[in-house]
Length: 187
Length: 300
Image 1 (cartoon, each protein chain N blue to C red):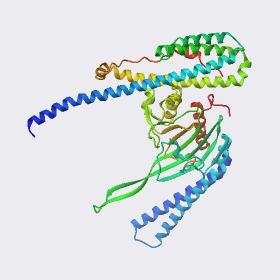
Image 2: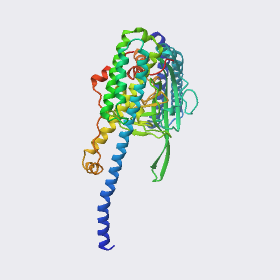
Image 3: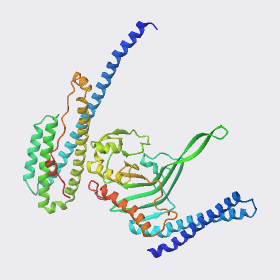
Image 4: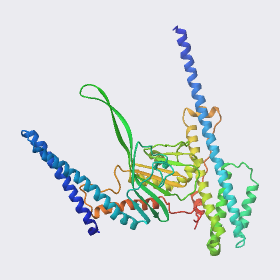
């Protein structure tokens, strides 16, 4: 084989290896980003479900206390003023507002034992417990994917590709421990 | 209790004495043949030896059968609500048969030789469970060179699972399937994908596969992961879990039968305690994994 052919092959390989690596890394980062987006939409679904169940619960307790219904009305209004596509921060806020309503409802239930005995209400309580579990699962799944994506983005040499395709670190979906304790279900 | 066990212990002693005596007769036969000139009557030692060994083995197996059918059946049903122990019954190897087939767990490899026995089912803290000893072997071919230099192939059955398989009712309804495996891998036509959870320790210990990522996070809460780690710590390297169709399957490889009598080991309170511990382990599983917290299911 002539020398110049070997030189061409070496140059081609030297050029191709970084290109292939760049494309592969870019694709894997984009796949991770898609997973983050999927997980985030899982949070949306769980938040919506929780909102629906909470609204049913508030309807049920209306006859017992007006305060909770008013608090919930405020949450509804707040949600209406938000864009359809909320940021992670806004979703956190939405969740915290619902936590507050739920914590208030728990207090109502403690004060009205009749309510605890109502089958419709106990079914709703069970549903909200399940929805809460799904929400936690979605939150953890989102954070696990964000963690994976962020740790790849900040490590060298992947950071070079991330900068080229304008991929940035994604925010975690935080839930303050104190707020999470508030929503502990009391069965 | 000791009084109830005495007849079985007595028969087991006889079986063991027969076996040892037979073995000694065979040794005497060998020694006589090697040390002295061959005489026909030496064969008597061999015949008596073989007969005694066969007698010992036969009596041991008969005692074991009687012990399981008469004593353990009552003993275990007293320890478990609605408990039933059927020594000669086991999990099936064919789909659709009752009790459940062992491959439903989706991580146990199809066996070339299949044994299942000591079926136990019942209810613990309101949770239905079924369990059975399972012994699985695969056929392997080993090539070796004989003394004449010829290459030969030897067929042999190798045990790859010997232990107990459990099926529990699970406390959550879920879509999709999740496998939490230590030494196994998925064996199913379903498209399982490996998923990493947020716990580094858990990911180091187990490989988690699922058909739906959300379900893995839904079932494997941080507390539940800790409980699975605890079960693993008690049985290192030998456990596998799967969550399919609202059931939990748990396989524990022990390399021994759970309820079988062991030669030269007394059937006494210590032995009964080991049986009691096996049942206690099922109680602990239900409690540790909070299977009895059925809060997300409709009252049935």
